[in-house]
Length: 510
Image (cartoon, rainbow, N blue to C red; front, side, top):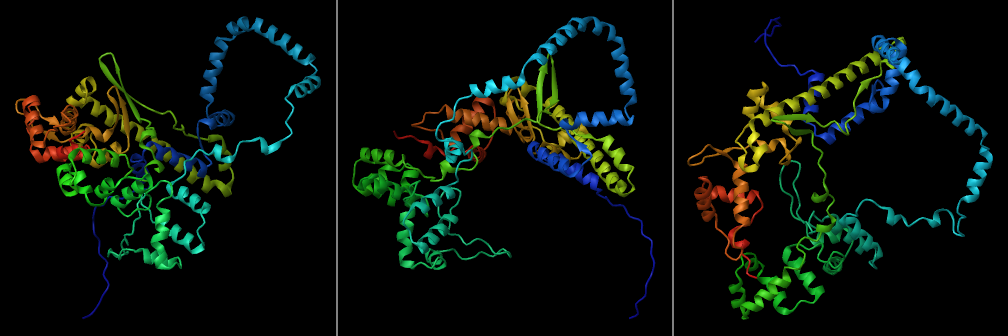
């Protein structure tokens, strides 16, 4: 079979993603903090970019180069119009300033400084850095669980191979403080075999027979119960340290599953004790810590501060959307530096590229701001009842509804609403919060699924804790009170999404 070369013409259409378009799309989906970091990187890498702190320099350079002559003429005109008034108003001020300057010149500054030095407190006998508080009192970052355990390990009397074994154990702790012995996955997706204490001991050159003893000593470090392999072991270690009695130890060892299901009669029957004794023992067990690393979390959800990207404010009968530019640097182009550098033939190509990059970045940031405001205005228009009355009046809405209103693609709306927050009279919400599926109501318009979740949460909060409502009972209440008709499994799904336990686990026996 012979081979030959041919020249053919083919007409086709394809979407070409220019670097500028890629940058605009990437900036659109960045959160506020990520955008601030991106701007900082661009300021460091592009000498033609200037932020708010560099505005004055840029303005001076523009005046010097003549690029803003019209602005300068307008400024001169305004200055001439107010010159006579300024002269009359400042005449008395000038006399006062000249009198002050005269008194300042008459001051003997050398004598003044000498007197100030004499007035300063004499240093104590211990000077220099010894007067400063210890460095531990000036730390601003809390220690992680691993750092806390390693500090205690350094204070212990472990030998070298025991220390290596303990370090391996500490390095294999999960975010809860439990010892994670899972082997993980290989690059091809296959599962590796789980680790054992013998594996860690062999890697640390420790006799495997000594590994359980070293682990037991490590588990009694602060917090007690750390490096446990399951919940039962974690609670058992704490109970032993605190001196719990035999009944409580037996419940921890063999009946935690009955405690979880609130099946206290089964515990009383198995241990041949009264139900009151079971209640008292379970009350003591509940005082133990099930998550040893709770107080060592690197991120505390209660202290996270979210800065909104936009504000929704009611002005009379109108809802106004304004962007939050506080904390965001306003970028400018240092035109004076650009014109001076462009005169250098060697730097012309470099400066031209940086100038284009700066212009595209400023345009992309401005386009991002306008797009977020446009999408938020559309959401506000569709969710006025929510802004006026609360979550119960949140209307069903999907990405397509906003995309059709603003003339954008659904993927663009998804990027705009991801990690963007809006401050409303009802609170601070992520823009994605307003997109909900619809739930049918018997004799009224459809309701948003988020409103149904809040209704379920309200019903459960008002229930009798000694006799909690089942999912089927919640279905009946929703239909009778609000006309919301949903299935029992939907209630169960929404309840799990809200982090609410089932009725059997919500029941309080004491």
